[in-house]
Length: 508
Image (cartoon, rainbow, N blue to C red; front, top):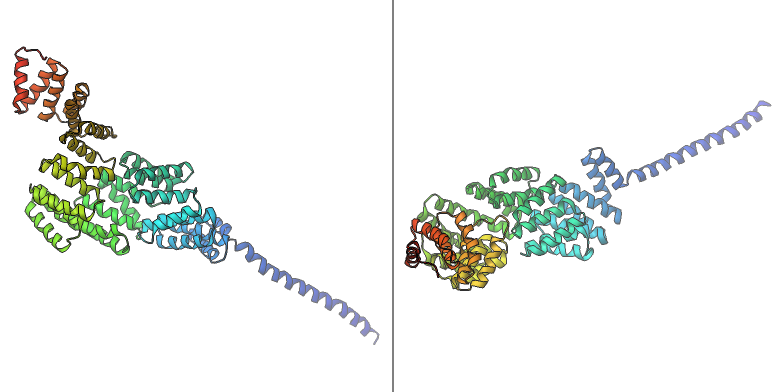
């Protein structure tokens, strides 16, 4: 009986100790369950670790969970999620993520989210990228991404020089591939194709995952008559991201340039279906239909092209694109009155379209001989595309024909100073303007260039002859005027002076 007190005492000692041990273990397990997720739920750190390990899907899952929270960490997660989505070509999901990030962030971070959103909206052909860009600038006036977005908008508004300046600022601020892409688009709009190509290629090297540089480069290749090189670039973009409207639009234009307008119609239709609010995408379908008719023109079926385009005009009387196409077919048929009438209506429908203004000016100048009437539409074309060599050349020629020689010299000097300029007619018109102002030295220099580019142009040789006549250089006068005569030049005044000099009469 004496053992019970001892056993009872032992139980009282052991049982509380065991209970305390269980309590400590329960507390530790509870603490572990609450603290371990806290460390694991840092979305940025978790995503960064997964990215470093090559687990992009895991990184996006972590960021998506983080973006569901509140405040700045959630905004940062959404912003990074948008970047990863965009790099994978998932533009719709990227746009959603950027929009969410912009809602949760403030200041510079908000400006970046809105800037990225604006560029993505423009590429996808949805939303209001202009309003988004302005909101980005409001959030962070000096930020890199707001500046990039604003550069794109200025180019879209036809303000290429402003776009270049903004993009150069973004490049200097470390904007990387996105800033270089914006610069390439602005340079292209400003007519600097070599600069644009260099910027796009550098952007592609800087970040091969971005889609914009490849699309931009494809456009430059098409515009510089290398459409065949552009097609595989665009095919890669479309395969990587089937939702990029800009890629389908450019692919349609590339196929038009390659003479495959039937195929182009499919790409244009996809772009129009995906971007119902994109006027350019909607107009592209009509552009392809016009191109199909103009292919008949290139195949020598001029009357058939006029017939098809006339029918298309009857179905779409308010389409400037159709009227421009019909005018081109009528120009090929040498029907000046009909061509000019269609071009005048096209200009009325879309006065901000440079190529229509140019075609009207060209038709008035070359088909009707109305140099004075051609000046206004050609000036408008140049105002819309200041670095377009063809527009500048035609404007300078029209000004010369309208007896505005000093202005013509300014315009033609600008044209012939463009990088890679090689149009003999520009140098010829410049030389003619100089001859009319009695500046024979500069005339001779311009005309020597014209004859080197177009050695069979008898008008260029004849005008060069007059320049050397003005310089009283008998030997060079005889050589140039004699060459014009051998090429069939018939103007009697020059031929009369040539004979007199050849007979030994001095130039006085």
